[in-house]
Length: 236
Image (tube, rainbow, N blue to C red; front, side):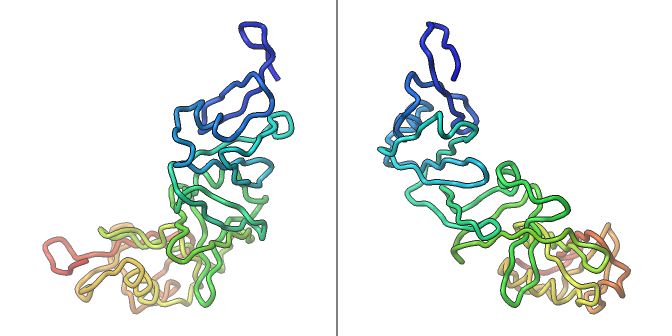
């Protein structure tokens, strides 16, 4: 609650990074959208984020700015909302993608832990700044906190001219995992074909995909650049 320039008492909340003030402490979703020029309200999704939890706000739903003090609003030009979980708590988002940088803004991982996407029968994907989570086409993403990896695991990212695998961050793999297995996963995900002549490199040096990571002398965080050697063949 602050004092406005004209002497009237006002309430405020951040909407898409802009602090917006209202004369009343209870406003409707469409008022918040209109305040930053997002009209018509029916073409937008409005999400309230407070205390690591999200709530979808309809155009005619009231928002008590006193009760929601400390929260922020995120508005999206979108016709649907997407569900996901963070440490088994249901959440909602207004578009099919969520930047990991924004995730970390609202959900800081517990001390000594990383946010991870757990996949059945697949290695964990550790979320990294600069990466993107996509809620389609698989649907709900389950984001869980797991102890930060030690020397017994590697974090691996494959970089190609057709995209990065995994898009969400890095694959957590065992040192005994064959490099070729990770490249095969990248090829399937990125729809790569005719890669027989491609070369894999780490820090500019060729690596043998038929080796395991430990055999190749790789550890820690590993970025593999994979593609046709300059002047060679291979199509994405």
